[in-house]
Amino acid sequence: MRKKVLQYLFMLSIGFPLAFLLLLSLGRRWSFPSVFPQELSFVNWELLHQSDDRLFQTFFLSMAISLVVSLMVTSLAFVVSKEIAYSKYRNTFLFLAYIPYLLSPVILAVIFQYFFIISNLTGTFLGVVIAQFLIAFPFGVLIYVNFWNKQIKELENLSYTLGGNRWQTFRKVLLPLSKNAIVLCFFQVFLISWFEYGLTNLIGVGKIKTLTVSVFNFINEANIFYAALASCLLVIPPMMLLYINKRFIFIKR
Amino acid sequence: MGLRFNNKMNNSKLFKGLFLAIVVLPVASGLVYAFLFSLGIIGVLNKGFHWDVWQTVLFDKPFWVSFGYSLYVALLSVAISLSVALTIALSWQKKLQKGLLSNVIYLPLCFPATVMAFFSFQLLAKSGLLSRIGYQLGFIKEINDFPVLIKDAYGMGIIFTSVLLITPFFIILFSNLYQSEKIASYVNLAKTLGASNRQILQKVMVPILLKRASITIYLFVIFVMGSYEVPLLLGRQNPQMISVAVLQKIQRFNLYDMPQGYAMSMLYVLLIMLILLIIYIKNSNLFKTQNS
Image 1 (cartoon, one colour):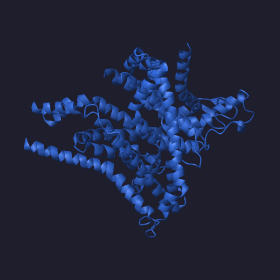
Image 2 (cartoon, rainbow over the protein chains, first blue to last red):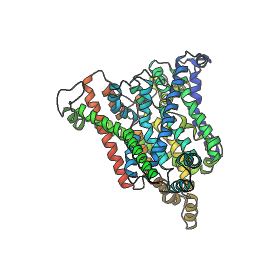
Image 3 (tube, rainbow over the protein chains, first blue to last red):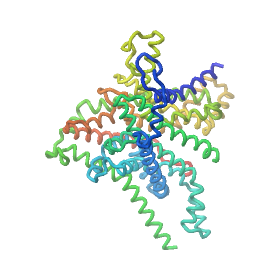
Image 4 (cartoon, rainbow over the protein chains, first blue to last red):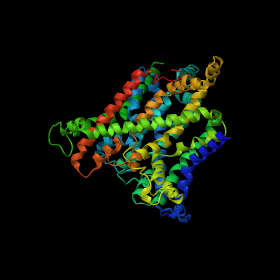
């Protein structure tokens, strides 16, 4: 009985941050010592319907950046990781991939910043996409490397032996086998890009306002209700990805 | 056949070259720039070669205080997370495999550090939710009676948030390892040989799980050390975690702090590379995959 109560309490505590942020996003005034906001309304959420609303545009800008970065990394890391995985210098390549993967993205942004300034990429959509691509690409390679193994190589060689060309081998053999790895890489890179703040803020110089940048801006403006709303918007897409992952992909495996 | 082999070789070189261009070149050229800038050879503050900045960074306190503080926050956060995660993963093993808990446990992974830091801020601040509840219940008489839980010297707010962020990941990891490492069989064997529950926990379950998860644990210590959003919102000016300290030097209005910022970032990168090298040397299976 005690164990069950603890489990329910634990599950409630997991859902609590989201419930609390949702409540704050509905607030208009929350002065001390009230436990709940004094005014609750859907006004903040209703503003999102207007296409000229700051957060509305920010949401789609963040979505666009994350989708472009995850598509680029998912496709390019797929082909590059294959060469790395079968290389005789595999461990050296992987060691090199771990360096940017382990470093704080904001420290990497400091190191990259000069080159982005001289190429006029700071404060641009393209600049932020390239910067995020540079930190996410090694991660993509590290995800795929586990997929390329002896068995996959033998199947690929068998396809060539039976007369398949490169395109056929890719479409009929490698793509079906790698579907889970591709989806995993896409989701993970999307999340890295979606969650990124420090690097985006430094390379975007405040001009590229993603949702994470907006949360900090709203906090600095002491607008906690809009910060809570932006936080909710940040959490919803990952939850949808999680649902899709668990409901459709995980079950199919 | 020969043509295909040549094409394959060219593609192989091309993709490896691409890897080096994307992964190694930006970091290496950035480090070279940072090094030359910190030596006063290039950049807007170029006034000729000097070691002053490196002497300050290497022999004065600020960098090492930030590095040590980051290490302290990371080690404590990971230690607390591991204790909580091990307790939950081993106590609720069956519930974590199927049922509501097996789905709900993934929910915190959807929270970015920015959002979790904001949540902690609204929860733990003097005007936060806990303080308000404390006031309503009569535990505090005014706002200032509430203890300082964020922007404090011990980094309690940062540690609390880091624990919230990484504990669910460790719970999922240990729960999966429990299945893949067939811990249940070892437990049965130990029971058959007469081991007590305490002995099974201390000599079988925990050592196996920690050993198998050791590399992930090391990597998480490095990740937490480099965290930026959480200490930016919940940390204070002194001591600062390393990422915040570097950024402040780079973005400060005083341009003369920039070389120090570059030197600090370079030193941090070198230290992380050194740690990675040690992990690699000590764990030869770091890059091994299941079938390689």
